[in-house]
Amino acid sequence: MSIAINTNKCVGCGRCVEVCPGNLIKMDGGGHARQMHPRDCWGCTACLKACPAGAVDFFLGADIGGRGATLSYREDGPIVTWTVNKPDGTTRAITLNKQDANRY
Ligand code: SF4
Ligand code: SF4
Image 1 (tube, protein in one colour):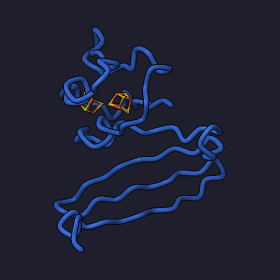
Image 2 (cartoon, protein in one colour):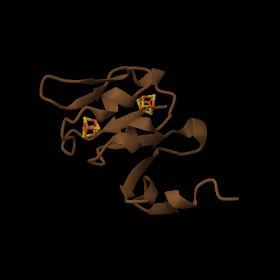
Image 3 (cartoon, rainbow, N blue to C red):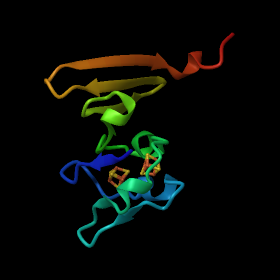
């Protein structure tokens, strides 16, 4: 599993560095985040959720049936949106309200 950091969107806040449980992300000399060991990423998505700039995407590789699609995360108050961006240019969005979590 692996992520992709868009350095054009990265604002250098360092939150992804702080939250990665494997210390797999470092800041480079230009003030942008870089994933250092992609093969060690286990896909917890903490860095996606922490990024305020939407600069981190997650690869959905063939090993998990993603066929090269990417997954992005956006948050607007309690509303979170997970979007699957497929290689053919189509997307599929899943929107959730965090306030509805754990309701039984
Ligand atoms: S998905 Fe999790 S393990 Fe992988 S780089 Fe992001 S925070 Fe680290
Ligand atoms: S959390 Fe996002 S904006 Fe902040 S350093 Fe990481 S990639 Fe850049």
